[in-house]
Amino acid sequence: MSNQMFVFALAAGAALLAVWIHARFPGLTPERMGKTLLHTGVAFALLKLTPGLGDSQAAMFAGVFLFVLPALTYAMLCSIWVLKLAQTALGVSR
Image 1: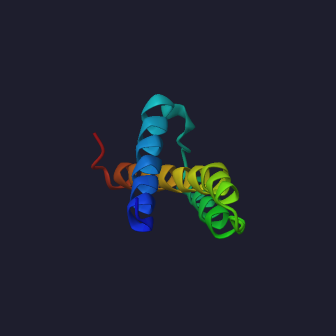
Image 2: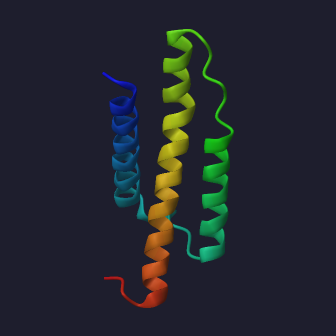
């Protein structure tokens, strides 16, 4: 598998996990936009602060699945929350 395909699969998996978490636990959605934007800032800061994954293949594998995947899932979940609250604020939610 090429690096590009792995990154695509990782991002798609994180998106599916975020959608599942949003559907399974709807009570996690913050009620106010300010709190949602705070969560979004934390999520993207976590993505920027992911550690160097090391030189060995095992260290890279562990780093991707222990740090990058959860941070990416959290960022995508926050994006879903922002979209949901924006729809609610505009009055177009169902």
